[in-house]
Length: 224
Figure 1 (cartoon, rainbow, N blue to C red):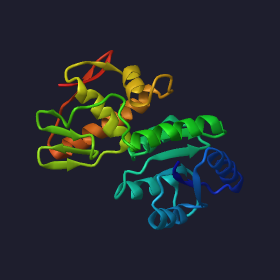
Figure 2 (cartoon, one colour):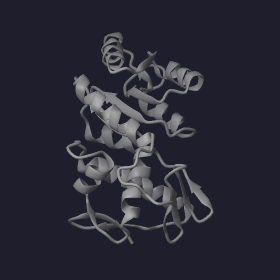
Figure 3 (cartoon, rainbow, N blue to C red):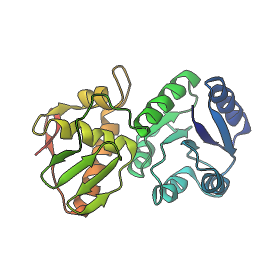
Figure 4 (cartoon, rainbow, N blue to C red):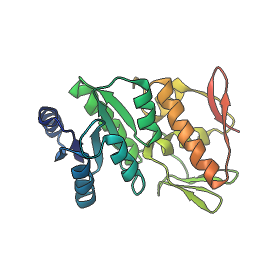
């Protein structure tokens, strides 16, 4: 069970979140605006964050950007705007998932559970040791990624996706296969969500001097 920070300027939404999370056995921390969310995050170090996008003081996108500067804590965006650009921007800033209002508490809990499972590094398939491919190295036990001597800060979702690709270099994975292996069978994630996560991984690898993920047009992705 996790300590979850629920951030929304609507008290009714926070009440729904608190009830659903506590029924699932989680401990709930709350904040009503972006600045308060950052204060609670610094003071309490929650295990996951459910973060509204549109809020006073500082909006969720800015809060996510600031948190990602220092932490890879799982973040699920919650928004009343079902806008594809908003979703992509949130994922580009480092969010792990995105749910729109009105939302199903059951779906939200399922997505939270999947995020927490990835952040706790529960292996889908056992690895005998660190995974390597050229200069790329993933230490699954320590949840650390390196390109050569440079360490790469990956979110739990990014780490899991890169791990899937790294387990079978050269194999082309469809987006659906990546979803099955990273989130679990039956979990709904759009192709654009996968593309956004892969784009972020590529950017981080590029900054470290690496370029190993290849787009297989009409299929998906693979390691070169």
